[in-house]
Image 1: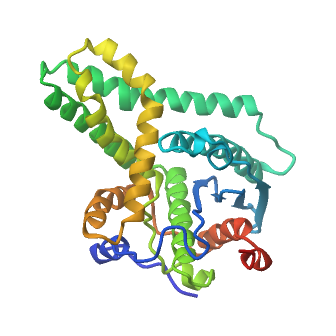
Image 2 (image 1 turned 30 degrees about the vertical axis):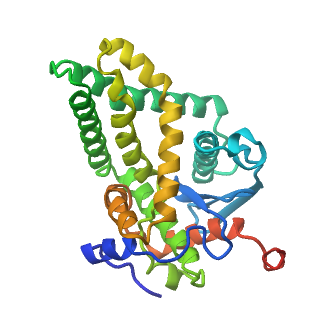
Length: 314
């Protein structure tokens, strides 16, 4: 069995130079996220969760998925499809976290949906407070009023807070384990999209960075806010803050389109330049996974891949 390699500058450049088409052999986009001792994977028609049980075995569940982004005309439109996809991922992430927690606690233990909902809501409030409210308040205290300068200052504060937060939480052992599964998720998708056989030996050699990652999405959000919110800087800070919070879904939808565009043109010179900070930020939220963690990610991805018979259907 192959061993995980250390990350270096050459590996980052190799990831930026990925030459396969986004979506892989089936031209279907697969994505996911790390959960507690496991990985969530989704396609346009199904999602699955795989988690390592305390006894060492892997538990896997799979459910069909009716995506608004694929079945309703409004949610197929640019920007709106990003809003729908991100909303669905938040809901799926909540379910996946609850299920993976129950796997660790025992099959007879169920996490109350209300408790999980309150946890997610609390996390959202904390994130808005740290990455939206505080940057606006601090930037307003500097006395900078020129629209572009004020927007840049606010954006820089937001990015610094984000980087500081990610660096700080990476020292927490439980979070570090999640970051390792995050790397395993990327490796599994990169391995599949390269056309390689989904064996642990092959997947463990793949890059732990991926252009469609949520970490890169956050970086793009920070850039979009600088551009979109620049005209608002002449307003009182508390008015601007309210408008920015209301515009967050639009910002997310625009950032989603930017990420799609960059991923689609990632082999061009401009695409590679744009991917630099997106992939670089993932060095903070991914860690090299163990072969056992890669095995879990492969199990999750394999559960949402089409069967051999379905692959023959045009």
